Length: 378
Image (tube, rainbow, N blue to C red):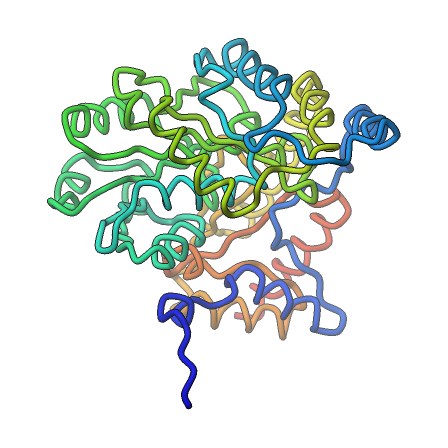
């Protein structure tokens, strides 16, 4: 008797980011600037709200999509801060942004449907699409300062295109889509039966200037799904909390996958969600702005080619001049320089590596010193 498994699962590996981070941690004397996790702790006011819920024995099943008060708090927050009008019954509280992505893509994809993924991109977009028997279609942007070229987007469209995923600010580049880029995308897609998934999880970490999300094009409301998370701006990565917002008919189907996968987000953490939404993120944003400025100056002083990020907390560094595959370069730097960064290939773009600057000032200085010392040996 021969047992078989789902072929889609057999084609997927543990994420490259996790694998490489484990390699760094297993290398004696090495340090890494690899993980996109704020070095701060969850704000006390958020933790206290969850503690109070536990003390009140809020440990039973909550409603599948979240408590009414949680969904209303999210709805009010989105109106006040982003001008997005999604009613509480158009929101699903999820177990992180990853589950929100999985439930959303599960809702819209049939086998063979194509999902356009502008690259460089977070690797889970491709793997989730494959697990759902969809077809990821890469749309390279590195030659256009990480902006989507209208003609390239038109060329990527086929009669099988079901969705495009837009991430702004972007992981791994920190790029923000310009108004011109968004207008061009809207012009191309406005009359097409194509979903737009707006992964806006870094939206609260924008360092100034004009910012717009594609979610603002509410004339396409029936085809837009907005993904958000508490992880990044509120240092709540371990809480595994996010949410998605969509027009009622789509949200009604997303909730089916959500409730069959996880039933609900935990009950006692939801007061923490409400407290987080009331917490001022300006201090965190200013901290990361200072770190961005320091890291960008250090890297450019080393002669490295990197575009200054406008949001999030990553630098995507061009290493093409060294003539090595990104994974080979990063492994060599880890072994010889005892410093780990994530290969660009893990984001669908060769010739680059990603540095995360959500580490302490001391760790950033030490890590950059090691990078500089290693580069002088090449």
